[in-house]
Image (cartoon, rainbow, N blue to C red; front, top):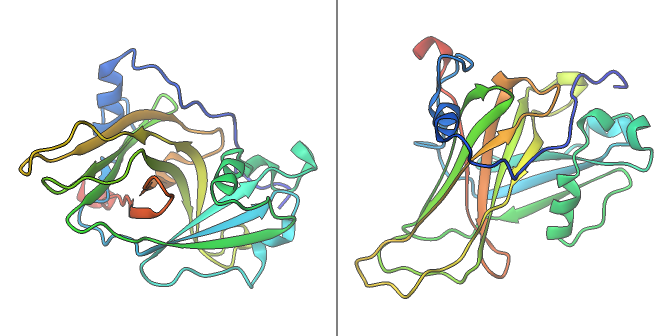
Length: 250
C-alpha cells in the first residue's frame, strides 16, 4: 500500500463566512458544483452505536488485516488513520489525519502501535432529532451541516459537543481492505450551550453550517458526512449519517 492513492493536506475549520452565497451553493448545489445533489440523513435509520477503528499509519498490514472488526447492523463504522512515528515515510501517511489524535484523546485512549477499535453506544434522546447534510463539492470545499432539534420544553446538560466528520466511503476490497470503510477526512466540532430557561412550548434548535476543506486526493463523489452529539459528561446522545440519492434519480 505504499502507493495508496488517498492523500491528505491540513484542513481548516476556521473558514470565514465571507460569502453567504458560497455556503448556499456548497450545501444546495450550483452550476459550478459536482453533479451530485444535496445529501442528508433524512429518512435514514439512526445508528445505535459507533464503531471506530484506528490504524497507526506505520502499520501497512493493518489495512488488510482479515481480523478487522466488522460493524453489526445499525452500527456506524468509521476509520481513522493515526499519524505514525515514521512521519511522511509511513506506509499509510497519505491518509493519516491529526484529527485521529484528537478523537483518541476524547476517548481517553493512547494512539495504537498497530490498530485498535472502540464501540460507543448511542444512548438516545426521546423526541429529539439529529440531522446531517452536505452538498456537492465546490472549489475544493464541501458545504456540510449538523442540526439538533429538541422536543418542546426539553433541556439537556450543556455544553453539548457535536462532531461532524467528512468521510470518504470506500467499498470492501478497496486496496485489499477486508471491510467497507468510512475514512475520516476532516472534522468540525461545534460546541452548543443552553440558552435561558424555556417555556413548555418552546423548542431548542442548534445548527452549524460550514464549508469543509476537501483534502488532496479525496474523491468528491465518495464523500459524505456522519455526525453525533455528546452531552456534558461525554455520553453520545444521537448519531446520524448522510446518504446520497442515486445519480439516475437526480
